[in-house]
View 1 (cartoon, helix red, strand yellow):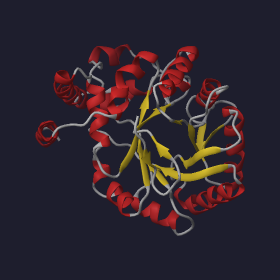
View 2 (cartoon, rainbow, N blue to C red; view 1 turned 90 degrees about the vertical axis):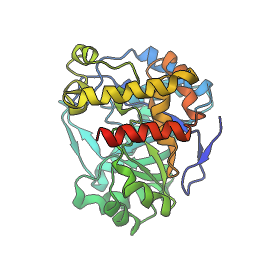
View 3 (cartoon, helix red, strand yellow; view 1 turned 45 degrees about the vertical axis):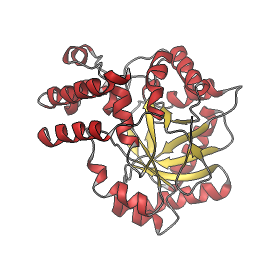
View 4 (cartoon, rainbow, N blue to C red; view 1 turned 30 degrees about the vertical axis):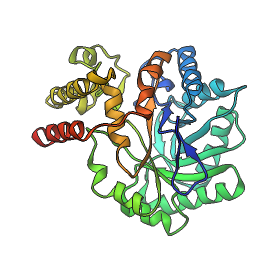
Length: 317
């Protein structure tokens, strides 16, 4: 699998990386319901065997559990690049809050290193720019952690252009992780052009819109989701948006059919077509999902196929 340089870093990543949000499981507000840890570990190992060279996780995913699963999956093998995040913390009752205070971030990095069972984090990212007033303190702390060698590179997630500029007055922002998909295309207006102009590496999350664009979603499946799967209550998965989004998924299925590829591959390839995007984070929960979606790393949409998608978006805003 070919690789791309991630912004100004010395890291070259495969076009798709393994996203470990869902493998964190359920039991908290943004959980995905119960997961089989052994199945998750098998999926991670299969992705690495097929050439994917980076994993993106966060302490918030499963309140530490995702990082623990990733740590078990990579133990005893050639290590992929590990990207994780900070700024979301929880109390002993599982209640999540956000902090960009220096002392909190320093505790977080030590906890992530312990759960992942590694010495250095390859990319450490502020998960959310919240509280906004503390962005400068938080980013200064990440710059300090980089100097100390606890993390190799530093980036941010969910930042807008103004927040990126504020951070860059303190230290270079090496990467950005924004939501970007055919359902969340507004990043194209300001954020992606800014990153392209300033050589900020971009790794996008939810390129398949959390399963909406896989071609396997349906109204019935949404109804059958467990209560602790956050998607069940998200507006994108509810009417009137759901029908429109499923029509879009059907178009992607139709485009993929002549290539013997599923809708999810088309959805991921659409995000990778943008010149600002270095890589897409794909959530694999089974080895079969890995095998089904990994062609997205090399698949390219034709001009006609891109036009079909654009026409749908114009007619169904």
